[in-house]
Length: 92
Image: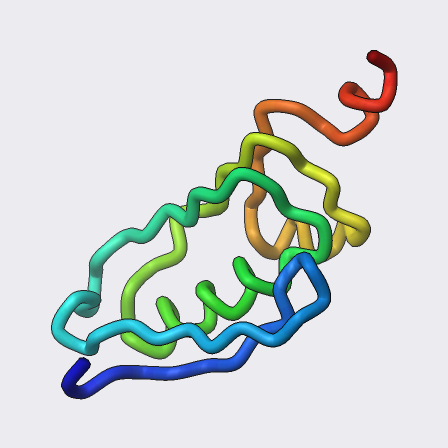
């Protein structure tokens, strides 16, 4: 992979996940939007945010299809937006 920044995160399935980004991909001033289908703990997104910031890029926010975040503080820290909240799925 060449020169890369690496982190280990606890993902939403409560397992460990190694994340990496090539240093040549992110540059100072780049804006990054994290997109995923589901967020429960936000662990993966928080780790990605750290990689983005370590590279000198700017975090634009996180977008998910289903927001099942347990922590409102982490939701705010990620500037997370969801298409649906988990409560909406449970009503059906």
